[in-house]
Amino acid sequence: MSATELKPSQKIKLKVIDMESGATTVCELDEAKTWDWGNQEILRVVDGFQITSWDKLVEVASFKAKKGYQEVKVYEGRRFMLLGGG
Image 1 (spheres, rainbow, N blue to C red):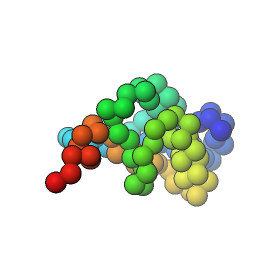
Image 2 (image 1 turned 135 degrees about the vertical axis):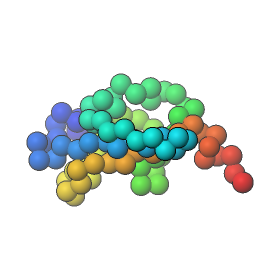
Image 3 (image 1 turned 30 degrees about the vertical axis):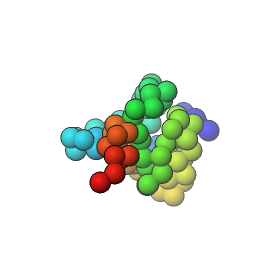
Image 4 (image 1 turned 45 degrees about the vertical axis):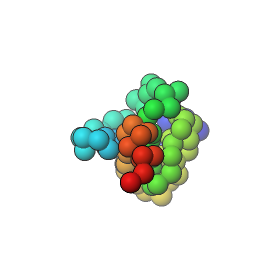
C-alpha cells in the first residue's frame, strides 16, 4: 500500500526528530519517498524499530493510521550516534 492509497481518514504526517540537534520537522508521508534510502549512514527509527526502506515506512504508517494515529515520530540520526556504545 502506498501513501496515496491511504484513505483520507487515514492520512498521517511524519514528525521527524533529528537525534543530534533535537530539531523537529513535520512533513507529509509522500515527502519521505524522496529520502535517500540507500544511505546507510543515516539511521531512522520508529517505536524502537529501524526503518530501512520507503515500503517499511509506509507499512508502519498505514498500521498507525488504521489505529487512529495522526502522526508518526521518526527519529533520524547518523548511525555512529547509536552504535558507538558507551
